[in-house]
Length: 227
Image (cartoon, rainbow, N blue to C red; front, side, top):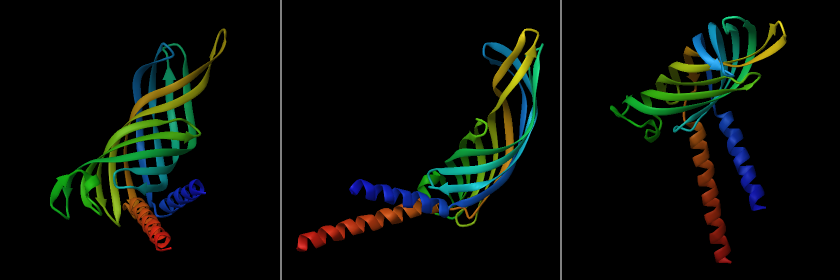
């Protein structure tokens, strides 16, 4: 019974956290121009990816969990000097992203700098680290840094640069038959993102639920002791 109650509480916290999430919208450009090795073979990639994104983000102050829905236009070529594959497609991508605030250069409320995790309801210019993975339909991977203006209850504006691993999975026709090329082409990304209704609401909700739970337990013990 206790386990069931804990599961229900966690489900409520997660559901309400998403309900109190901010909305993020943005766009980015990926430039793919690199030489790399895949399956023991040297390859070159050239091209670009352009995308727009829209999604929700749950802010826990120490970190943000984002669930963007991206529309990507992918146009790049992968070759080994003799053969090549061309990727030309539009992909609707669902991704999962983690943002970690690293440092506040300026907290405009307190006129100080420091770790953003110790600044509740802040208005600040910050440095963030970011990592994301594509969930469906393609396994993209990114890692990067961003400069962010963050204002609690209003907006978070993020200008970011990222290292990208763009997946490809295509057939190459050779004299002896067909060979499957599968891997990730490295590149770089630059983008701009705005979060509307930014704020650590997910963290505040968890604290509220835990406080209510603690108060309920204490009153239950007092009631049991009175009997």
